[in-house]
Length: 292
View 1 (tube, rainbow, N blue to C red):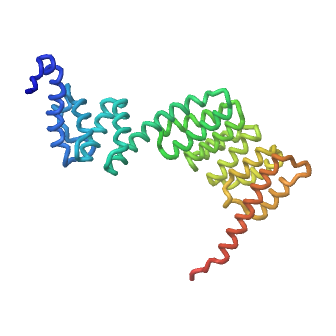
View 2: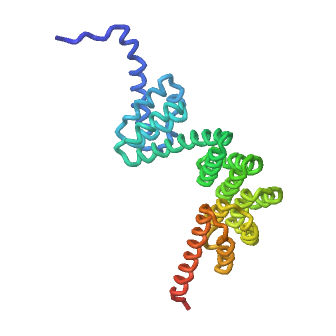
View 3: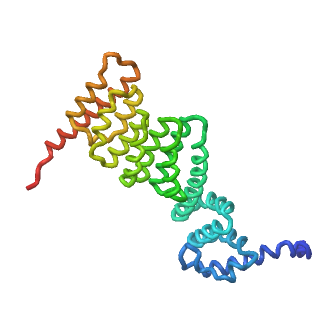
């Protein structure tokens, strides 16, 4: 039996899809041998009421670079729809397409993660705030935040104003991770006003990592007054390579106290592990042949 033709109502409903398919064919010709940034599309194409639908149709095109161009343009036109397209293309047969889609997903996830972390800086639990500020430092160091400058400004604010000393301690380390040696002036400024031993431990550790020549000596002077948990943090956070054997002997003397509690063993084990690494590094260096 011969199939009847579409009714006028059906034809009217299908017209946008037909127009979009026609536009998609025209766009594919322009994009096929161009860059994946979609710069080959004309203003006439972009101004078409069927432009977004045509881009969706191109997500199934045979050439991966055309699919990628469509994905990038959809993200520009409608970020939410672009995220859906990226999720779908993350399983594309083309390795190049999967890589491009994955990067778009990572950018979207990082943006969402950044917003969440910024909100968590106001969490009532200090442990949550500590984790959040450390994560922001890591993201800033990998440049996966929208504005590195704004993130650094936020970390500085936490370092200056959080009510819990351990959060301020971890913010100091986070600032170093984000800025490295460039953060030294602000760390020194905070050292001038910070009085809590836990927070000062973080400042000394960050300054030592940044290369300040006196930070390690300051840290050694502070070590006897720290509680066991702060001592353990100090031992685990300072770079092993910056210890010298004579200083480590002093550290071991400080940590081996007659009133040791269980928590102190963590600091002592960290110190002994550091000393073993120093000795192993020195032995390896002595075995290396010298070149004339």
